[in-house]
Image 1 (cartoon, rainbow, N blue to C red):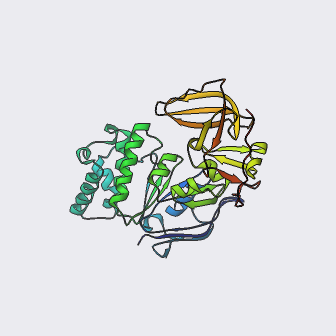
Image 2 (tube, rainbow, N blue to C red):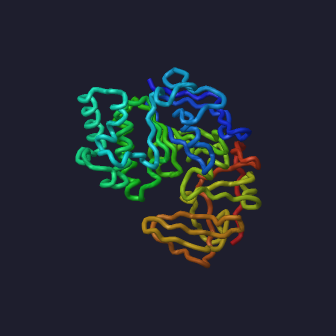
Image 3 (cartoon, rainbow, N blue to C red):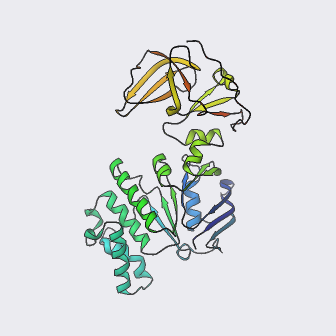
Length: 346
């Protein structure tokens, strides 16, 4: 079993607390993604799980065994870094086989495991090549293959696609999704700053801020039901619009949050809000309209296809029914029934 349980975990560097009272239950076979802004502690949490960082307080269990003081090599964990960390003078085969050779695994067993992993990752034609002869995506697959041959209980991925260009990220993300399906009993924990990776790969997402877990849930739970203003603004791309003050008062909230894709443009003066278009982007399949209504940031409206609204146009718009979020002054969701919003003047 590869269940992982974190209880009351703290990580301190001197007087600075980087991780604060982390409590997580991760089931065997789950794909968990850690997300959060830079410096939130997601990579540090991954490194404490791996054993590369010590735990200041709390407990870490893997498969029911407390591993706080267990060496990284004895935890049943394999880690994949963003930098690949391949040996440049070794072939693909030797890079993937290296950890098995260190444990004196029989030669026939090494070859079998490496060839099986290479086939799974479509690396079989490249086993005799050196890393310098591979693309970035192929090198990352070699790094993943090196982890697979160890048959770990838990895979840890630390932003593995951040060094790849857009096309390679898509291709390698598909490889990781296939790997997930082919190893259903292996737990995978993945750190990323990329919204698409988090939303498409995760069974559950852990959102961190300043070393604290803000919310844990499936991608759609976080998208549809954020439990704080921070999570609402962090999940989704483009990010959620936030309207405050007089723009939020008709909804009985300190802040109203509406995703760009949940805004509708309506006839002049008939919407909840009106403003002037300051910029628009036509992306072919979608358009983004940026509207100034007096908030700190412009409101973004996402439309399908090309937009007829360009700089200088005055438009009226409103959220789709039940597809907006209300927050109080502390940033928590408002649970009382919404007031009937008053239509703004054009």
